[in-house]
Length: 153
Image 1 (cartoon, rainbow, N blue to C red):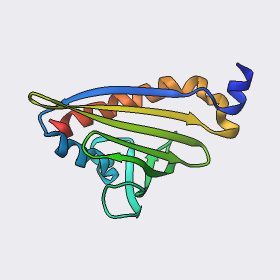
Image 2: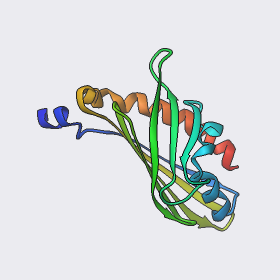
Image 3: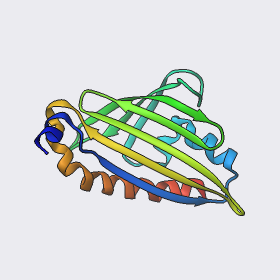
Image 4: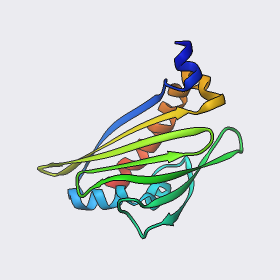
């Protein structure tokens, strides 16, 4: 346990499934383009594309999120998997946190199901925060899920 605390092996995870009336292609295009994050996640202040044009493998985005109090934090996200229209994986990193977000899209008779699976880990010196991160991450995730339900309706 001490090893896990010291080296950040504990993590916070949030998984949600959103039924959508959008086609799998429409939902994938929306979710894979990180510039849309700020439209559905109230915790996201802004998104700037650093490399690439829109969604795609290897694209890079700086995502600025609300921190504690009035602070902000920017994570640099890179698209590491891009399998249109079923799977996208992005990894965001800064000095404090690492976030790995996978979106999986499955066709349904009325559109698709969008599964958002996010793992957040505190890095280095703040790694002991991983014990508390789960509760905070669940609140953030629940708020984002409400916005995502509206965006994918």
